[in-house]
Length: 398
Image 1 (cartoon, one colour):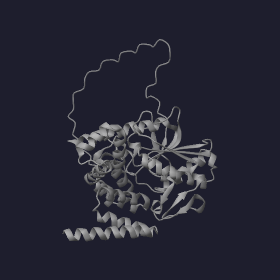
Image 2 (cartoon, rainbow, N blue to C red):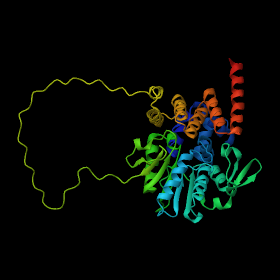
Image 3 (cartoon, rainbow, N blue to C red):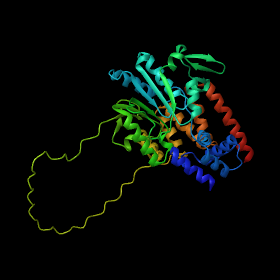
Image 4 (tube, one colour):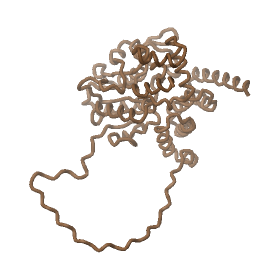
């Protein structure tokens, strides 16, 4: 009961949909929370969460998903640069990263814009995250090498450190960070507006009401004609008319469009003329209508098997928006994205499969193949070791 009560508290305060994490991840989060606060059971953990705001913050740290890396979903950064080039009147270009995790996304946005020729004084990036620890890491700007996923930053943008690197001071001056809860009505300051919003892989972890509230808050601060970047399986134009795909861009890049005028505009001022009553018609005899057979929508798997990859991807995304913990659909999405040569999105899908199911060897094997294909040797070696340990363990238990 205490476990359920704590999950309800997280549901209420940060919008967490516990089902989106999976049982194994939840068990680990509870265990890590008990260890961090030095309590013996979930009843004591819930008591600390209720009584002590700092303890609740510690618990939240264990339930959020902080994974991010530099140049994640690189085609969206290409969209960011194109949008900035097409909208030279938007200066400084105001960019929001929510959630910002440890700052990888925010700093990548700065680097992409600087490399495109924007002066530093024309770039204003704000990162917000519910995790205080993540925001502190973002402000420090120090990262391990695995934050690059086998790539490297150009020399002007970073300084080497043992086992990693530090973001150059010129980059850090373009980005600022603060702690904030996406469900907090006071999250944004008065008259705070943005030209671009990164909100990737947050909505899939929220329950439907929280998802609606967060999306509404983002649209309220995103300027008309602004650009919003969604994450894997977040097909936002299917849930709101205020967003439409960015033409020629990544399928998960959206433009904020003005609301359509009402279908029946109000009458002009003046005394309206009464409408003439329509002439009465004799009722026609009712005809028996033949029932039409209900259309059966093809499954994502059937669409993929028939080579309709774009439709399969859309079907997977719709399914995952309602059931973000569906490992089978996530794995299929990874296969579809691989076939579409969208390797970054494929790796992200397989990584989420591994997050939800740590014993999913096929997903690990596909990540190895993708890492090799992209020349990410360190990641490939790390994943091979993980797969070897898992095969050894599963072989022993068989």
